[in-house]
Length: 130
Image 1 (cartoon, rainbow, N blue to C red):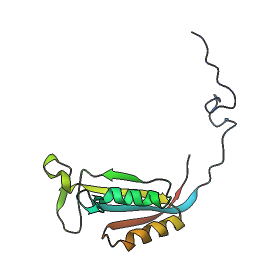
Image 2: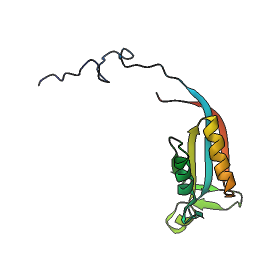
Image 3: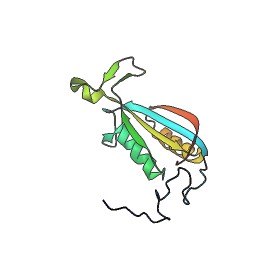
Image 4: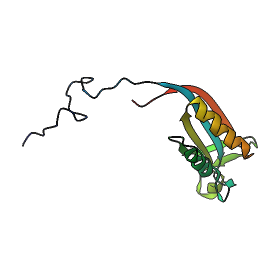
C-alpha cells in the first residue's frame, strides 16, 4: 500500500495537534442567541411561520439560522402540541440564530413590526467559528 502525500500548506497536513501552519487565533464575538417559538400550522404570507422567520433572517443578511421541529411542547394556551401522525399540523417549531447586537436589534424590530405574536428568548452569548 502506497503512502498518501499531503502538501504542507493544506489543512490536515500536520500530524501533531495544534501545530498546523494555518492555525488562526479564534476571536469570539459577543452577541445574542435568539429563539423564536411558533407552531408549524401558523402562517405568514402563505408560508409556515417558522420558514417565514428563517427567510426574513436571511433577507436581513444574518449569516445563519436554524429551524428546529419539536417532538412535543405547550405554549400560552396550555395545550400540548405533538409531532405525532394525527396532530402534525400542531407541531411546535423553534427558529434559532446567533447574532451580533446590531443584527439582533434589526431582526427583533423586523419581527415586532409584523405583529406576529411569536414568543422570543434573547440570551447574551459569545460565539465564533472553531
